[in-house]
Image 1: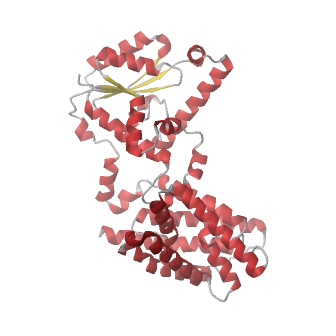
Image 2 (image 1 turned 45 degrees about the horizontal axis):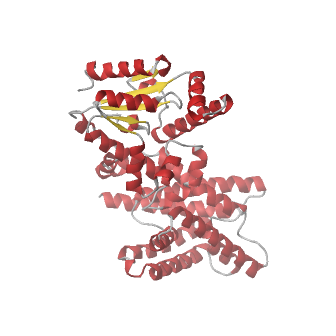
Image 3 (image 1 turned 90 degrees about the horizontal axis):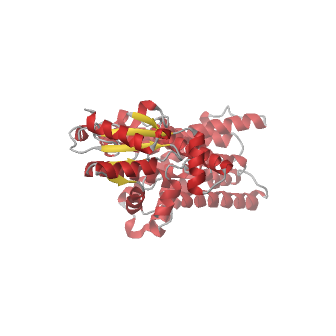
Length: 433
């Protein structure tokens, strides 16, 4: 029953996809990169966009067969009927949109953007179904898996190559650039980005549509409160403003309680599970410069069923490491959204450390040998990046008291902060110790 649901969702997504491609094409500002070659050919030969789409898709499937050889599986043949159906859907939607005939550049842009929105939702729906891939994305997967290239950069190279080839064909056949315009570039940038946004906004949809199996998958990435309720050991997680002294306080607290202390060790463990270098992880964890630009840069990964954006992979891997460490024994864990990963664990004290900016500025000036202005700028930059990273992945406000058991101003002194936390650990009934 679930499989049937998935195929129905996929077919709906395929139709929505074709509707988006047709509307983008009708906007007369070019078309999406994957459709650029079939579109240019359809403008110069007596065959429809849908028919050329089918032919081009079959060519991509044949190239996959050559690339993968023995690794070409029977399931890849499913792309053939999908390609044929997609081609017919495109011709059908081109006819349904007969009334779309923009008379001004503004109306063309409006139709283009609406088409990108529709196509983005169609891509999201296909990814949601998780039963098959269109030949374009499957081709990129074949290349990246055979030559061990990174999926995102391979997808970018593929889209650029298609656009360049389409432009060359247009110049050869029509002696002018026809069918490849600014709309092609806009579609290349926006469609995956929109699909990624739908994936974030509609994260509840998989379990709603497909039930228990999706729920089980979600649970593997979420803390199991029933397992943690009877945990024999205590975990203290510390979120902190930059310059508040959270690292030193956490380490001293762990030594006082006889707990393990985890900070950079999490980076090392994450490196082991992701294959990224510790420096690569350190540069990207808790460091979201701009969520909009990040989604734009990472949009290509929406098409992959085997790889995800590096920052997303790091976040998920760190979450797994944090949950494993929490099960190991009494410990203090610093930062990395640990309060979110362990939010359902009762044997966990969630602490947030903050301090007035002037106090933190003086501390950073001394520790990092910076001028007052440089220290102030660095504090604000680091706090903003930690806040954006936290909100992006948890949908919660960084430093909000409701996310923690206690928030403390470290200006009262490191010893005083440690004493308060120790008192909560040993005296509060919520924390078994």
